[in-house]
Amino acid sequence: MNTQRHVVRLGDVHKEYGATRALDGVSLDVRAGDAVAVMGPSGCGKSTLLNMIAGLDRPTRGTVEVAGQDLGAMNETELALFRRRHIGMIFQFFNLIEDLPALDNAALAAQLTGTPARQARDRAAELFEELGIAGRKDAYPAVLSGGERQRVAVARALMNRPALLLADEPTGALDSRSGEQVMDLLIDLNQIGQTLLIVTHDPGLAARCASRTVELGDGRVVAEHGLSEHGLSEHGLPEHSPERAS
Image (cartoon, rainbow, N blue to C red; front, side):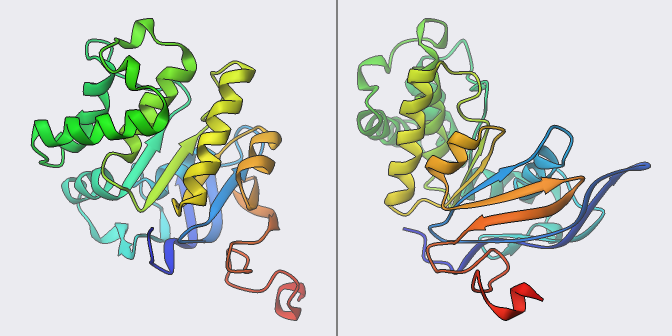
């Protein structure tokens, strides 16, 4: 379990693309063990926020810290290595390599950080066992169901024991049964201490998998619901404190 107090901390983050303001002063804290859902309509800034936290884009101004590190102080090479080691990512459309069997798709994430191939494959095999897909380790993505592909993607995301697991519409490309299975998996991961940040349009996914929901609108936080496991909002204040009411 990650024991850091804050896994994510955003301070007054702005992002502008020419005349378009994608993020407008977003501040957000995610603590170790939290499960946070970010919701909002298309164009509200969800994807931009995810990219900031993943180190895939940089803010126009403001600070982004992940696992205690200021992403703004890193160059692109440092960011890429940091992301591989400390951030796991799950995508709506899986992003598996079609020419690699399932186990090698997952193991590659560890090999890219310098883990020897055999050790990486052993770690992947352990995860496949835990995720219930051990029998599909030699299968290629083309013959896997959507739910199986997403479980391979989850294994890949967990290979390096990340401080943070980012999930971008993780059930968006799945049928209802597979979606339910992935939701159960995310809940199980959080219950054993994995910090989650889920971007979704689906209120059912947010309600089921997250203890806190942050709603974005026009690049700003417009509402927040629920508490972290520490009884605090993402701004570090008790949910019903006088300071929050002011």
